[in-house]
Length: 340
Image 1 (tube, rainbow, N blue to C red):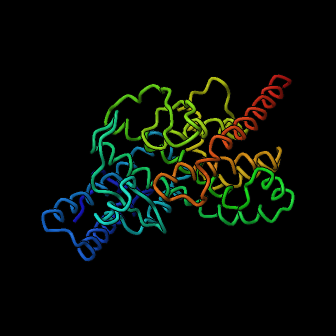
Image 2: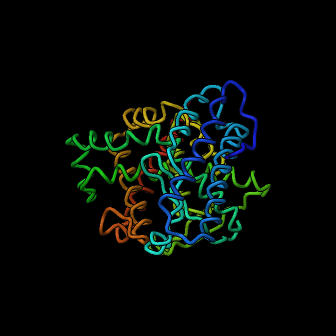
């Protein structure tokens, strides 16, 4: 039996307690039925399932406290989170096949590794909280990301866009789709990092320069992410192009991504993105997203989860394409702002 940490009896959240209890029961029963672990491991992992349910409850608490969830989107966020069907423990066989996987979300099922190594800023327990709340973010973003494949296929039917993409060797609609997925990863990671630092009463560290061992041909990048640190700078620069976010040069990395993340939890996020593309240079925005798709795929190549065979080789060139086009548009936006 799961006992909630907070009182969710308020009418806006009255169904949340029952959902958590049901999710705990389903997840525990599924583990007991499918697991081949020894009895000692089972006892440990049953407690992990309880921890993951508690993490979900704390995640919702912090979404409200930090202003991600407001009266305007309570119904949407609750609908998304309560669509979560199961939390499953990634079994030892699967972990042995890919030691880099700590969690993933598929078809409203969140799969999580029971143990994660500590990092520079988090111990194992804190990092486990981070990875689980990251996956819960994907459940919320499914509100818009579930339509991404249809949008990618529809845009690929546009002859001009397809020809433009092929000039850069983006020969598939999945480059664009992968670019939207990078945006999803940046949003879920930044939100979970904010929440994790608050949950454990820690100060988020300053950004530092790093060198990727996977991407950009050893190019230096700037980040304070624990996971997906190579994506943060990309996400910030992309977000700054979005006029509906109403950003300016005074916004920090954290401010930029927080605004992007909060906007993503509204029901019209994907429509706003598409409107942005259509009212500016659609070809450029399309290529920018495709370049982001290569970068995401290159990141996943290390874990053999990539879609394309040459993403690692193309990552630096794709970053240059991304950087050139985004810089051009950001400079143009500054000119327009000055004229006003």
